Length: 127
Image (cartoon, one colour):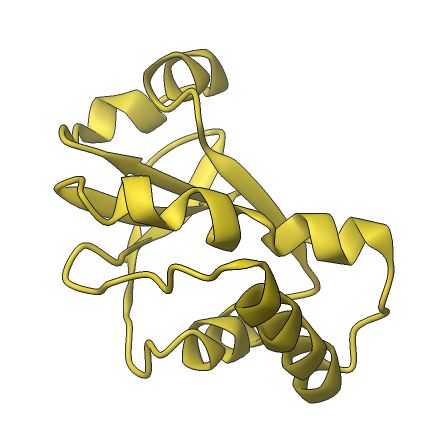
């Protein structure tokens, strides 16, 4: 299992990824999604409308790489739209339908509108 941290901010500094303490301090509202591999991450991104995205390496003990989503708009789902999105995600990913999985993606219903107003949106993969 791999942890992918979704973050948004009006400031971006690679020094914030040097250790977990600075990361958590600077990006306090980060959301972690647990996936099996990067293939699932790309499947999720495609499902939210992001077709092509390259990763960039990080020289950090804590974090391996990141993806810059800043040019994209995250979906802003209401409850009904999120439930439809989630059902389709379970279908296309083959992941288990449970409360952990549901909670994994809940931020797309609550955080996207705030994050879409910020300058930077990133996904950071932990080591």
